Length: 224
Length: 215
Image 1 (cartoon, chains in turn green, cyan):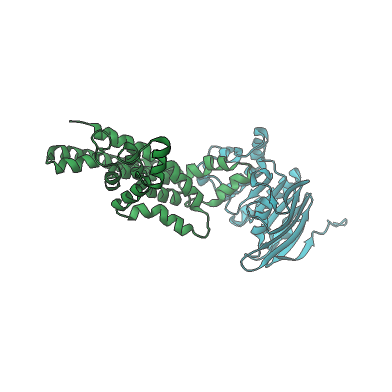
Image 2 (image 1 turned 135 degrees about the vertical axis):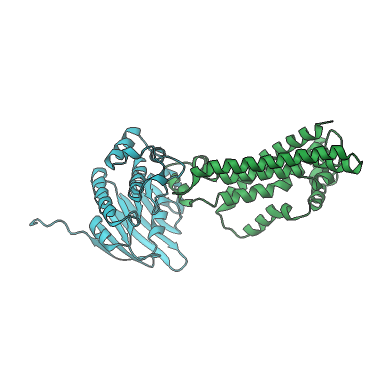
């Protein structure tokens, strides 16, 4: 059996998770305690990929990154670089569909501790970055971690948008969910079954680990 | 030494306050919602006044709309709920902004919290938390100390002890202290000057009578 889809899926989910973790944490912290006109609209845009059918997300990505899309065209003209029907398409689809989960977890995590803790650190001479590194981030970490696991799981399972943006190209864009679909379609039920068990196992392990880990670490974070 | 004039539009009234302090304890006394905490926040830089100026020891903290960042102001701020970092030990809390380790350790000795160094805030009593928070604020060697109802969560006995401690520390330290309180007795006991606040205005001030020569 060819294990390429497994490595491709893991590589995509891992890289997408790193990017989404950084972006989601940044925007989560930025917006968590800020009120400004239009905040709800910004948050709605961030969360939109969560409620839209993946095909709509895929269509939107084709519209933006396709050969005639406004970014896709620039990339081709300037760098001769095509996103659709390449691994980068798979990656972008995974990023876009999993971002809302990370953003939501991060925004909630940065709201759940006393804002005076950050203020106290500032009055003690800590720069903005030091406050984030030593106070905000460690206190938000349990919430951020659950965001990471959700993001990874969502990125690993992405199907609809990926298919629309990247298609099914063996060895290039065939992640596990796509491999399952095309295995079933070609009547190869044994291969499909293997992938299905594998992905269930991955998901199950991730959730078990998260629960175990957060039980272990929450102790440290219980407020006085 | 400390010279403050601030104006700020709040939800229900306009806050307009002038105050000055040498190395003394000032009490801001008034009902909740009279703008006491807003004054502390403006002085520390956590909120920005609409107009006015704040000078401390010859440094311009706020002047013509320009604000010095909070972390450069050298102001110790003791929050009402103490805001001790729950994920750090007492020693990590106190050393977070300390200038010198020797002085921080002296403070801990002075406030009788040396034995708590390795404890987490959740495992110590209210009175101990208050002393840790005070040590933490003083360890930064500030030019001004702001206290936002620091004794309100303490029981009677602990509070009396904390009052004495504040007076003792102030005599050793000699920096201006602004104490926000809604307990008149506390203001009378601790402050050299009391500012009575109502709806964002100082309605009167009262200076402590100098100790009588006959007593």
